[in-house]
Length: 442
Image (cartoon, rainbow, N blue to C red; front, side):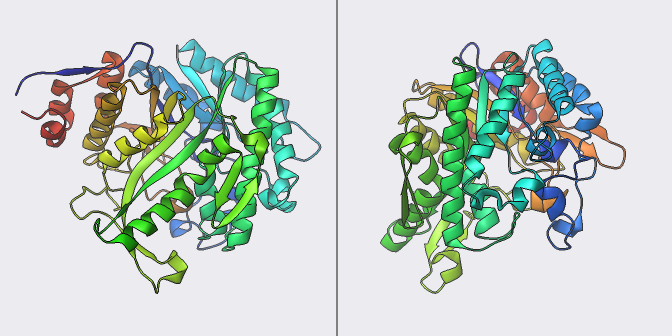
């Protein structure tokens, strides 16, 4: 087989992504800390505990590992409940810790990307009704202002809200996230308030830092008809896509939120993203099921031909990733892959998954689509929300008993890509040989 090297543009961002609640540990003041207290909410009733002990300072060694293995960027989130622990108090010490983290990234020649809301918020906001309260957008904007003023020296790359669709669906439709509700009307209200919160924060950030680049990390999940020639399957796949995937990003272009057969005009949202953030993991085949009322008249399953991750949580469908990149270019904005990865404690599935998805990014760039960076989820195993410690997404493994980090082969695969700014046939052959004929066909 001939040797080949697929080069990426100079200045391309290669990094990993993390979220405060999942890596910091030792937090008792947010919605997830409270959610953990009720049996049945988290897999095996596990607790985040120290998580990856970043609040205890272990971010330093993890940033060292990232820098030493060629990463030139990192996406992290700020914990609202630490910065604003009570309605009438800001915690300057917490801001100092985050300032030290960002300074640590910059000193390691890594570009920080900062997320302001990644699924967690302070208990005092929850007690006021959380995102069901129409005051939440203004409260979020005040928090954004405080954080940006404190950290703008070290970054100009901001994500206001991570996966507003997943957060809304999981908290207000399927009940797996706090507050554990199942109410379509409330879900629409929450999504609309998240849109208003993003819009208000966007204005605040640009007022404080005119050169800032501000976006949203949009979760995109493939929905394809199980029977391509059967129109009802196609209709249902389209309805799921339009509601779950496209409602929020389209609202940032049109100023109108269309979700679950409801509509809200938010004209100030129009034009409030400077880049398009994409979180992509997998795709479903959709079957029309007229009796499945609770599942929106659909049945979903993975393509039986697709490789599955360790727990069956993710099917590798890189071609659907490429289709989303093609959709994203229509916004005429820079594109950042803000999350992509797989759970795999044994590191058998992940190497091929990463190689094939990175290959799709390269393909898109070769059509001159404006993709500027790629972030793997995640740097180190972390507490995976309602799934607890049952899924291991880290390039580096974590022994939760000792806090020891475990180097997986994917570390070296990704390091080779980052350091070469390229994906080579030699690297794929070494780390993901099963993917070689799909990426570099003879």
